[in-house]
Image (tube, rainbow, N blue to C red; front, top):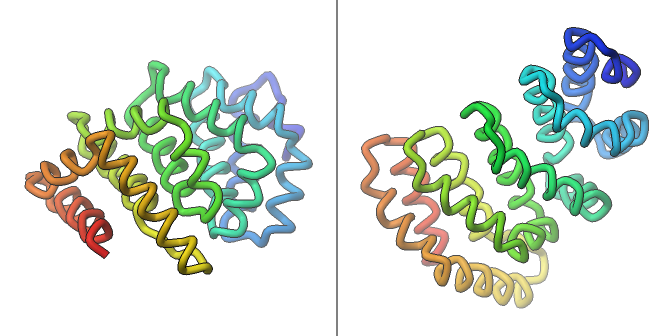
Length: 208
């Protein structure tokens, strides 16, 4: 399957990455690690710049499945966080479809759900500004995905309560300074009911 992703045929590349994406869905950490090792990080990031949109979408799907459940998110981001954040930045800056950017923002939302991984977003002002931009985008799908990122950054479920509250407060303060709270306030009046509800949920987290 990993060999197929290196094929000159885009159809074979799609099939190879699609199979890996399905294999990674709800997989345990051991299998996810084996997929990353077998595919190789260089090939994974090469696929994230593939000119074929179908290949790119399936690769994003694979990455999203790899970055699910907090221990897996934290483990993968501790090893490959720098490259993943660079790839995410390039996609959000590029001329890509709404679907590609939505999937990329969903990956950021997964990263934001990690306990330690979320700091890779909080310490990256460029990414934070991009999330802020997409919260105010004209496309509701992108607004929803970006707001979900913020909701996960605000929310906290770390084990050590004292450290958790300190870290949580620091994140909330920084997001407030960036004007994120003002945007959330506006989105609670959004015409789209899902966006309105997601913004309200995020605001409730602020008040916890």
